[in-house]
Image (spheres, rainbow, N blue to C red):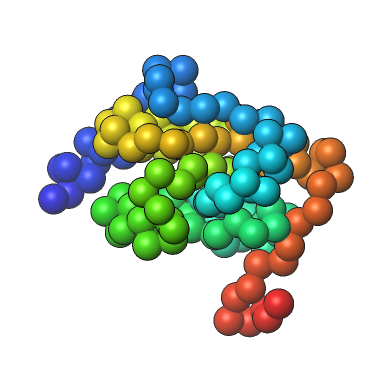
Length: 144
């Protein structure tokens, strides 16, 4: 089990974003349009990052890598599937700069053959630079 998780993590880290035929790179305007069309936005950053910047309105915080760079892909994918309203619903991944979301998107589309996977290619940092709105992250210690 440990070896398979390490191999998975290694393949995610070394997979180039451009190798995924089904991974779509989106800019902030395209993300906004797709949200309005019913896309599911998943913010894969850490809880600390969510607290620092907030989330794109309507997105779901679901970190893929913990602060130590570890992940539980099976649990993460199960949670992702439970958030989807249909099998063909588009999923947009968001991270800080587009790097992690690109790697995870490549993994989902290339390795697991999931379709309708996109990512904000310049991350939430571009969303914030454009002064687009965010919403606070709700936690046990902070209510929204």
